[in-house]
Image (tube, rainbow, N blue to C red; front, side, top):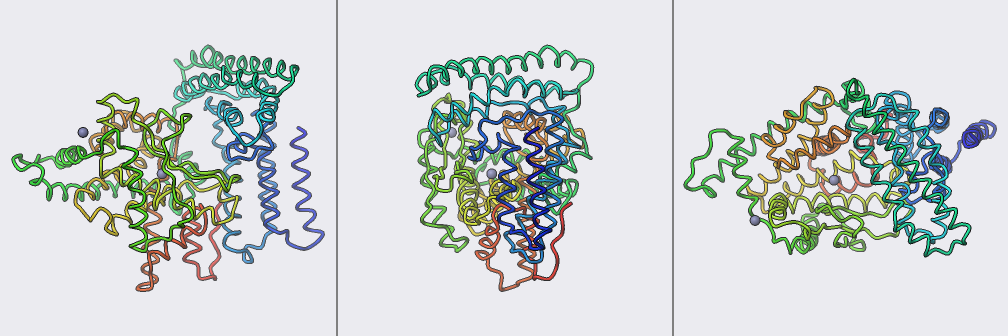
Length: 587
Ligand code: ZN
Ligand code: ZN
């Protein structure tokens, strides 16, 4: 409650102060104040991005706090009207639009989507505590004092959670039970050990040990509630995990921020899938005799493509050289981008390939680890998973999936000129807003776009094999969108989904089952890859048509990346803008 009063007061101060002075408030100061207030409402998110002032806070998900959140958003939406958009720089203007989107989305989530009622996995404190316990941004004693105080708020937190839940889905209930059981481990022996090792005095230690027990009880109580009171009600009625067309359309609008509706993007994905099948069959016909000189090609085109993909997948590196193969490709990709003049890559910021650290272990694959927005000077790593724990059969299956061709495309996507290069550019656009509220569709869209662009420029020597495997990879992106929309809007069943992924997109059964599960637990996010890719390709075509011979690929890439991680829709408006037309307003 105190929190709420303070927020209203500070927002009023902004607008009153402005009216008296008749002088527009400096946008930069406004942003700083907004972000500071925003973190107070979202302390868990703040800890996650490296802003640690509010580590000891834990906002109980009560009705009162939700109303305060909506009031906060409405007050800031009003304050945004102070600024004369025609006089703002492009960077400021995109920031303003992204803040507005964020505030409108928050209101929509609270008032319309109401996930707090039907998704019990919304309530899970493992991550928020884990970041503080495992972080090294502050001395151990200070971090332990913060979590001790945070633990005291867990009772109110879970009491509000239990009061919120109404008719949740079976899938999100099971997920919540699993995740909260995992969260209990955060309060296990390694935490007890660090308390013993800390410099806290005896009274503080005693208090902390009591709070740890208290935290574990609160979490266990929530698990019991879900097991004993919620799950038995699922026999009779449970909410469908499918959110339906109306909510899907709206969530797509808030989360993806595209020029297109969800239905339009779905339609484009269906067309793209048919085109990819056509291209893949064409290549399969051309390659058939080379790989199957004595075998007649199957009449069914999808079966023929599958056979060709299977034979090409046998070309892969040895399990012991997985990391070194990736490490060797990074300088090759960098040299290609440089020689073809595709994008300036800062030689001062080379990408470091490393074996993934222990706390990430367990999942093979590759990912980029970037410093958060409050840690500008941290290093960026390309983490490569180890196959050490795999059996021979598991390693073979994994290596066939990430075969010689696909591994190169993965490196383009994750590293150069994909996510890593985009990140370097984004860090040069000095906007905290774009870094914190970065648009996932633009970020994934860029990485997916670079795969196509690199092959178009001749990466992989234009070999038919490389193109076929690229199309397979791209088909997965396209099918992610088809799946997401079909499952949530058109009622697609698990059997139909598996048929789409395995028989029509040539995926492995295990991968397809994991994707089905992900699609039942999330909504809209799986559309981001294809939507961003489609919009960037289209923007490039528009600019080519407009500039004719004056179009330069490198200049296009560098200008596109210069706006930070803003939605493609806004970048498009700014890049096509001649300085006369007003920017379309998002609503
Ligand atoms: Zn093999
Ligand atoms: Zn990605």
